[in-house]
Length: 247
Image 1 (tube, rainbow, N blue to C red):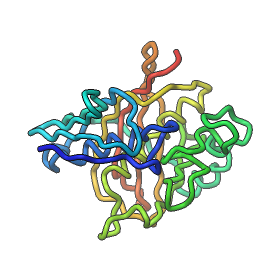
Image 2 (image 1 turned 30 degrees about the vertical axis):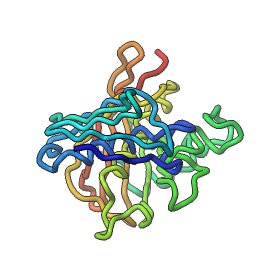
Image 3 (image 1 turned 180 degrees about the vertical axis):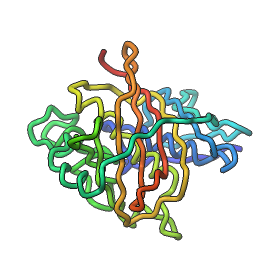
Image 4 (image 1 turned 135 degrees about the vertical axis):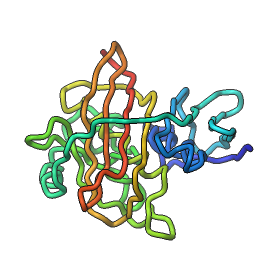
């Protein structure tokens, strides 16, 4: 089966290209629930252009996105088991939010003149309006070896049942992995691969916590973990990421 989709400017990550988590979640969403039950690995092969037709080829156990002959990314079922640390509470993450690089007016940022580290990013952009961006502002929290964001997703992102679609959950899991390295003074480049496992539905308009922590560095590969928790403290989703960047 083949379908044609477009990634709108709203869902950009780096300027003029799609947010890696959102694009990955979009590809993952075409796998069946049975195929995705233990996890899905998405490898991003090229930046995703905005507002252009993207051909998504859906096979028995693989989805792949192309623009012309250029492979943008592919998704495969992949078992993922990850040790997820206990996150800070929503209140503690919210109290630390003001110190997030996403809100730092002095940081060297991706878009000159914008607010914070990545002003236009669908996930962490502070200059993206409520209801248009997720506004996940991860920050260092005392006593936690990583970063965490207090997040109450706008109902604009929910489906008819009030739940967040797969691509929104994947997008929310994206940037806290990069921020975990940024918290240690390490700037990474682009997201190259993300493997995620969704454990339970996530409702909009709840007090959620998203955590991010560093796993390893191998040359230019920076490995991070992220996780999303509902307001009952249950882990709803987690991911392992590979960021390609500076050593």
